[in-house]
Image 1: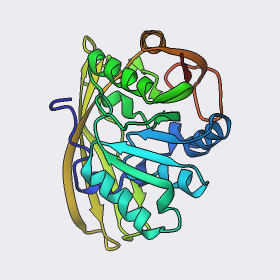
Image 2: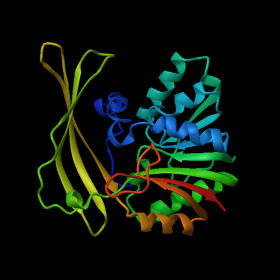
Image 3: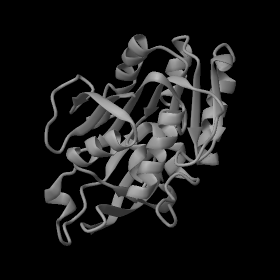
Image 4: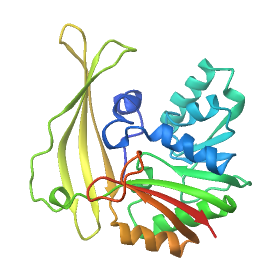
Length: 263
């Protein structure tokens, strides 16, 4: 993942992460994962746990959960949240590590790769490594829940298309307005990647710009047939596919939401 991601390293992108995630096509994702855990049991492992946006509700619901992430800055936010909620801290463990090469020395009933985190793996080699490592950490018959975006080809094959309008969200903690804009987008159809440069701005109640930062990420997109083959190749049986967290059937340019069983 060399030179593929800076987004989660520090700054406004990290502190504002929860404001911009779990909305739009990701709306309802936490409830969906909790419903899956009712079926598949615990302990639960979340890969790409980030700020604990999903992990904390699991701990509150009484599940034993481990969250793994490669970003110290994101994990620090999650640790602060757990420190503010000592009554659930014993239910959750945070681990710094890379999803393509980790060894927790235990197995889980369910593994989640949430909020499209898998798409930061920008080569098929990394994708296979992550899925095989995940398989090793699942108990026999354990379940994997995987969320990706389904590629929107009109955007990913566009040449010089103008980025979308900035997203603006009020931060209730600081009272500031946070603006996130995509400054540039570079598509590589041959590698199935998109690299975006993003800008974050914090604006106070008087309309004054008080912070401004640029960052970037690279995401790899995959069609459904490719993911189905990857899962099969890495020892999984696909059980369900959805296009949203309301369990709608597969649909173009929405979510690829997979439920698979380790075999």
